[in-house]
Amino acid sequence: MGRAIGYDSTGTIEFIHDSRSGDTFFLEMNTRLQVEHPVTELTVGIDLVEWQLRVAAGEPLGFGQPDLSQRGCAIEARVCAENPAAGFAPEIGTLVGYREPRGEGVRVDSGVRSGSQVTPYYDSMLAKVIAHADDRSTAARRLATALDDTVLLGVHSNLGFLADLLRHDHFAQVLTTHYIERAFPAGWQPRADDGLAIAAAALHGVLAQQAAAGRSAWQSLGAWRAAGAGSGTGSTQVLLEDEQRCVHEVSVSPLGEGWRVRAGDRDLTLAAALDGDTLAVQRDGLTVRFTVALEQHATQGERLWISGPGGTWAWRRLDRWQRALQGAAGADERGGNRLLAPMPGLVTQVQASVGMAVNAGDILVQMEAMKMVHTLTAAVPGRVAELRCRVGDAVRGGDVLVVMETMESEEKQ
Image (cartoon, rainbow, N blue to C red):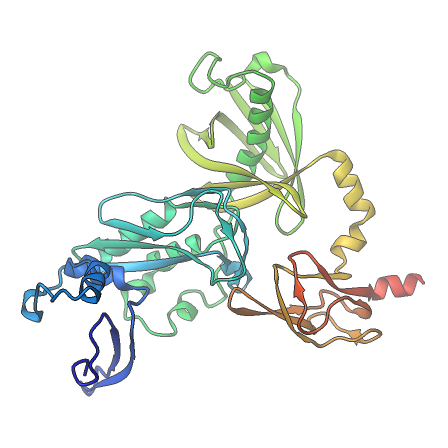
């Protein structure tokens, strides 16, 4: 076909195969490499990009079809700045921490690093992680481990979702377009925190404060005596706000050569040491290492990102006065009376008007960002008090688009 149309470059031809009849049908041809070209490169052993450039420069191919053979299996995962637990909504922000995995048979193609800006002007893919092995099951295990070892802080990502997909029983069976529905019939949710992540977030604040005061966590006696009994007998109260805006009060108290951390009904005895961006936490003789990074967020203040074996979390540390202000302005902030733009983008539809009564879940505004349409809905029943956007507006993340009068505020009037 390429000879018939005079095509002389790299291209990708897609077919669909009917396993029952044995028939193969042509779908389309793309005059470029596909995103998945590393899979071909690893299984065939040819650098397709190199040969694309050589052919473009007029060189003949140095091999023929009989010279090519495939070996083993390769699987590629696209790492995206998106939140799988929130309908795979894409996210923007600054990468405050990024580290790529290493290991036998693991390849990473990426265009980001720590400090990179994830903007709304392109799609959400940040990197591709590819694993190659002699067979499919080994490649899947290698890829899942590589995704676990990838650190990406500052925006949510699909790392945990992809790793869970690879480890699911259904992955070993025949894949279909309904695979995700079968694997997660109730939708995917991140692995629950067993208390160690919130304890690590609280300990990080205490240890970082000690370091700032001029005390090294490594100058105490014992490998795990980050701050032992000599630091005092009183406890430190740490307020952490999660991404659902629920505030957790955590108590951190010196206990011998370690710490006692209380958060709700969880009571943990731990040892901990902070070295740069690595927080090592020891519980029952088992050491778990977290990667931590601080982000100065434009609208949410300072956020602490933590990545560990159980997933990635973002916490906002609060002072007492901040919590008091939250209580005073709780209805304004949590009552859902302001609809904010989740990221910079273009307003494409406005389905609200001043004075209109709406129910929770009613669509108010639609906007486009990161090559996706985002539907913004009312969080609570009420009435539209102000409309601060119109079709065609370019808005910034955090801009107020609609102001609501909630039913509660109307009753008070």
